[in-house]
Length: 120
Image 1: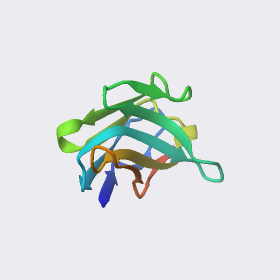
Image 2: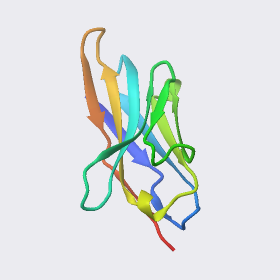
Image 3: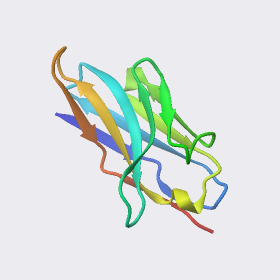
Image 4: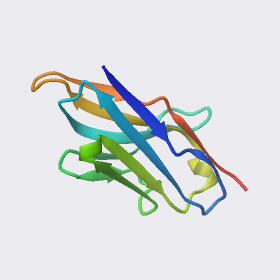
């Protein structure tokens, strides 16, 4: 089993910054992909940013240039640095981690979610 612990959410004013973190622990041989999703109230969950094992990143158009995803392989942790936050960024943010348990066994795991609220 794998446990994901998210932290860093909260209330911030428009234009402010927050950094989310997601640490994975448990039965992990290695991690191949890590990502952040969000679910605004009343809407579907959407991809925000992702990073693969080669460090290649992708972002949704709505956050490009404002958010940065990174990973610390030694700590099995991913970070989402969010700058120039807008009220439209308000949502519950979830991390998703793809784990190799063995060389041929993989599974995806989700964090518990952390609320980000952008409001004056």
